[in-house]
Length: 303
Image (tube, rainbow, N blue to C red):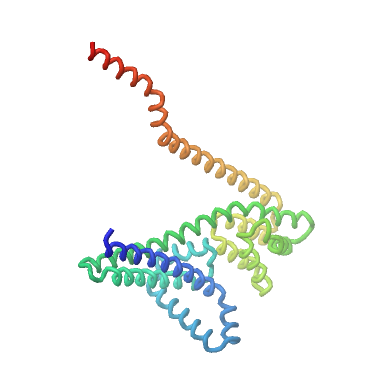
């Protein structure tokens, strides 16, 4: 391996490490964008440094809004981030702008690493595109895993609400009980449930608070549960029986998904075992016969 190839390999590894560090910084920025009230309080406590951080965040939001626009792409990005736990309206613009910034930095890094090569611009453009795709794929994978966890925890959350209702509490107190007890049985849903408590404490109507809960959780099963609660609040219908039935159905769906994953894992293991062990098994079984055939042919030749 010549010196130039070694230099390119080292530069690529450094760039990959920088991309991962930048992705972690992106997640921190999204958390900061979500915690807008804490950011404003920090500005009051810390003065000028916090103001500069807030100004940078505002610039990212403006650039991200220009990139996303107001079409289907913006809605898909916002829903993806809600599934990932970033439900504030300014999270999608910050993510879009930071993703573009990471892609530009990746392209610049590859251009610097290969600037003496005639294809440096092509390498830089390819690196920028791949970096943007990689960030989107990582966020999508994280959102899908989190959505799966929320679906698995939803039956437990509904069970807490049903437990409160069966204990004689009203709908609001049952929801508050489920939110207060959600940290251990439903850690992924717990932030959205605690946000429901904050909305109710702030005087938001029950219908609006439940709609925001369904938007924050962003899974279809949560929307079904909140629709049942809203219907009961609006028309006074029975709530315990349909909620319990929904919890049972969600539990069965979770069991079915678990069985499906076990079945797919079994199929994958079977394929691996066939690829890894079948050639060796065929050699082991056919070697004696093949050896005897060679010996017989050799004896015929000598005869």
